[in-house]
Image (cartoon, rainbow, N blue to C red; front, side, top):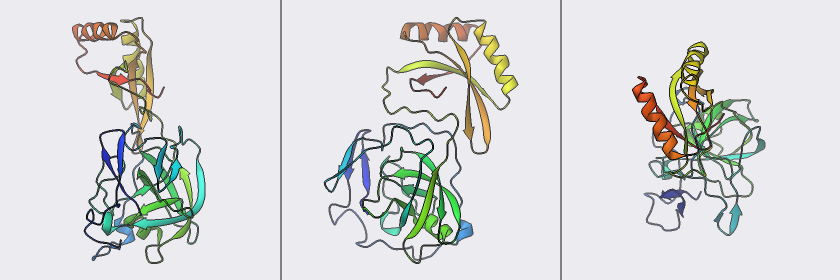
Length: 263
């Protein structure tokens, strides 16, 4: 399988083109195998979708691919393969280090990162993986899973399996692919485990500004966090002035949020 290394945010180099990049010629399982119960599912959480790994369109081996603008509700059925020791420790398409023991995957068009429930149709096993790479660039395969994921799904010995993919919709996921350094238009002033506490903060802030103040829920692991945000604020000077007023009022913990916030 072709792997990519991230160079900057938008420039992606197609790897595997030269013999000298990898320590071995053929991919394989590790010398010491892992057991299915030792591979943990990826834990779904609200992660921003950024430019890294999401260049669209892109071309590999003369074929052009497009990254989906949204993966909400996406499902797919087809053949899965896996990759392992040859690529262990190498960079994925978004610049992360590939760990063949973790529940990760490569997909040609899903936004990075995306959390996907994968079900092996041959044996009924299922698990959640996190897409952080591009591939597989074979017309007869829809997803390339890490070695560890293949073990947990029970097809590491046979190489491929018929699978069903279901994208998990995660509340609070932000799409920042088109954002630049000038795209800060919101302030986050607190995040709470209780919606009631978030509502108290929202009311307190709304009494101090004419800009909209709203609650933005987000899922992290198995918990919902209620983020209190102010905006949109179109003028950077007004954004800075609001930050100063918040400091004077005793709100010392806040952060700027880019355009593209999930409302």
